[in-house]
Length: 133
Image 1 (tube, rainbow, N blue to C red):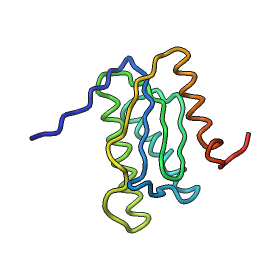
Image 2 (cartoon, one colour; image 1 turned 180 degrees about the vertical axis):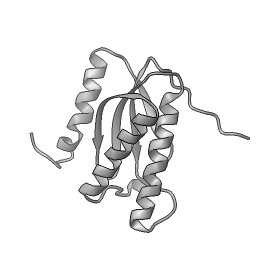
Image 3 (cartoon, rainbow, N blue to C red; image 1 turned 120 degrees about the horizontal axis):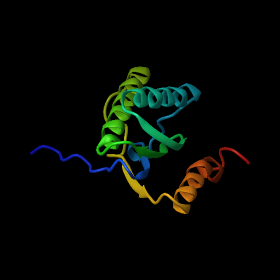
Image 4 (tube, rainbow, N blue to C red; image 1 turned 45 degrees about the vertical axis):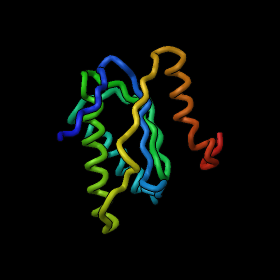
């Protein structure tokens, strides 16, 4: 039985998250973070996406994404995570599952809720004690 695609409308903004399998650390140094952001840029060249905010933490990430078309979110995330996994395995000589599961995408109302989510995403490293304001 084929897997069903996630329904994601193009006129809705989403808070997208994913975490390392068993909460494992996936980003070990600045090169890992930079490479992930390079993949975000490359993904955006393949499938246009409005990126409102992002935060990449050692074992997870948050993205605020606003797709242009229906179904773009799933295609965008599939490309992003597939490329990231291949590059991670190549760099570290590993194999197997990196991510805990499929990404989660929560619709965001485009009003004060959007502002609250962006603030939450941007404050994530502060709450984790990784940086100070």
